[in-house]
Length: 466
Image 1: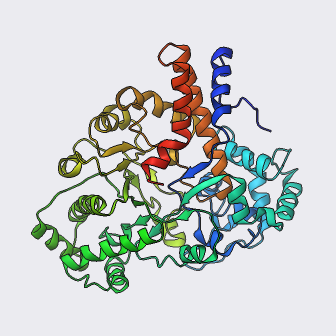
Image 2 (image 1 turned 180 degrees about the vertical axis):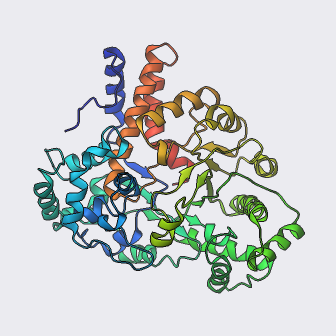
Image 3 (image 1 turned 90 degrees about the vertical axis):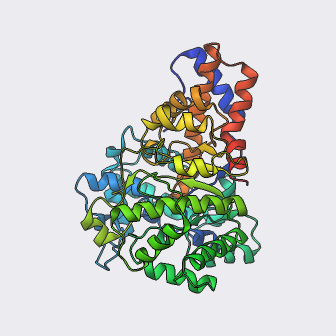
C-alpha cells in the first residue's frame, strides 16, 4: 500500500540522498518522551480487545474527522462522560470507520493507519467497505496472539523509552505495577499539574485538597501548596519521570511577589478568580514550576495556544480530549518575558516550548530559543504533526535556532500502533530536508549523516534526560 519512497523529494538526486540518509536511521530505537498511551496496557499486558478499540475509539485524530462529516461520537463507541449509551458492537464501529476511510485521503492519519495496517498486521489491501470485515478478522485473530500483546508490540516497535502523562493527583498505580512486574520495558510518567494549577479546571479546590492529602501537606496555605507540588514531583520522579507537562490556554508567565501570589491562590481556592486573575495565577505557577525544575532536574514542557473544549455540548456529554481543542493565535515574546527574565539564563534548566501557532516559529520562538540557554523548541505536534508541518518547521526555525536548539521528535499519541508510523514520517521528512541542504551546498554529507542520527534519536534522548 505504501511506496518505499514516500515523502522523499521528487528530484531524483535529492531523493537518492534522502533515501540513503533515511536507511542509516530508519532502524534506530524509538524515543517517545511525550505521549498519552495508557500505562494500564503495559501493566496488565492484556490483549487489545478488538480493532475498533485499537484504531478508532481512543484516537481523536480519527473520530474528529468522522464526526466532522456528521457521524455521532456515540456511533464510534466514544465513551460518554454523562453515562449515556454508545455503540458497543466493535465490528459495527469498524465498518463505520471503513465505510468512511476515504475521508482521510491526504491527511497524516491516513499514512499512519496504512503504516500500522501494513507493517504491524500485514494487511495488503486498502481499507474500505469491501475489505472491512476481512481486515477486521485478520487483525482480531492476531490480537489474540502473544506476539500482539502490548509488551510484545512495545518490543516489536523497537521502543527504547516511552513517557505517559498523568495528573498530579494520579496515584501512578499502573506505573508501580509495571515496576513490580520485572518487565524491562522503559515506561515512565510525566507530571501534568494542570488540574491543581488552573483555577478554572473543574473541581480545582477539591483537586488541591486531594493533592494535600496525598502529600501530607496543608494545601489551604500558599507555602503548603508549593511544598505539596515538590512532594508530588518527587513521587513522580521516583516512578521514572524526567519531565513536567503544562497545557495552559496562553503562554503568559508572571513572576509575582510571594504575597501577591498567595492572595491569588486564596481567591482561586474559593472560586473567586476572574478570567484575568486565573490567567495571572497560571502564569506565575509556570515560573514556580521552572524554579522547582532547577531544584529537581525535571525537564519542563509548555504547550499553550489551544482553545480547549470548544463545543460546550460535547464537553458536557463526553468530557475532555474529544477533538474540540482548537489552535489560537499566541504571543510568546511578551508572554514568556517574566519567566525567561527569571530563569532563562540557566543552563541547568530545560524548557521545551511547543506551539500550535506556526506563525510564531520564525518571528518569535526560533529567535528566543536561539539565544536563551534554558529554552528549546519542541517539534511540530498535534495539528502540525504532518509532512508539511514538519517541513515548515525545519524551514522556518533552522535558520535562526539551528538544529541543536530543537529536541528531535515526539509522537504525542494515544494510538499505540501509530507510534512507529509517526517516527517513520519524521525521519523521512528530516532526511529529505537534510538531503536538500547537501545538494544546495549548505551542508556536507558527513554532517547530514550525523544530523540525521541526532534528529531521529540523540536530541530527544538527551533533552528529556533519558
